[in-house]
Image 1 (cartoon, one colour):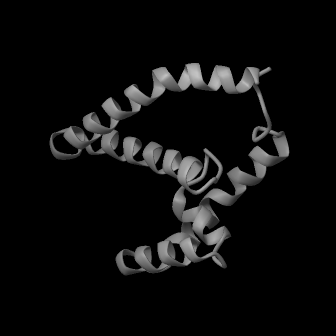
Image 2 (cartoon, rainbow, N blue to C red):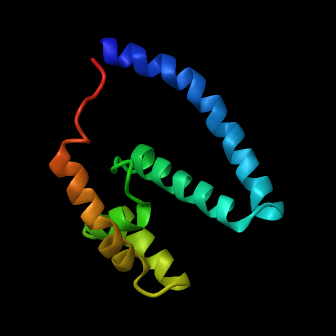
Length: 114
């Protein structure tokens, strides 16, 4: 219960900042530095993976889709990204899987509050 309460309190501050961050990211996408926009999109990708797809916070949607390629949502992601870049999800997973393995080995996916 303590973890849920702490999470709620933190989220009441983070969600408005996330919305502001998204709006700023749109602005940066049109008028800002490419590197800053790329970092923002990567962070948003990891956020979406963790919240919508129940993935790891340190992994992209593409990499997660390759790991879960037998699931329907993953096949859709793989199909869509293949239209833009052939084998994108497979290559993303090849690049990110060592990091996922390290985070799991170190136990960073476990509860850290209370």
